[in-house]
Image (tube, rainbow, N blue to C red; front, side):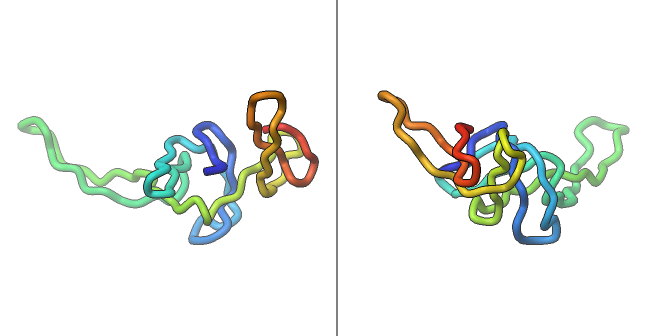
Length: 101
């Protein structure tokens, strides 16, 4: 998977198309990510204590990785991710500006 926690991504499909945000959580098994403040869904929460009211909260739902694109930290544009081996480490590079992410 080319996207890691803390990366900035652009959403390509869905109701939040064109918006960008920071990745909070990555699930490599399911191939999904959670982006901060985007793909919000309403969730009903029961009252936990006596006298407390139940409420409706908004939470970020997972997105498929194929629906987002990484935003390069150097050039600030959304681009595809390439890989380069530098010494004994494998690093991600931006396909547009060839900068290391």
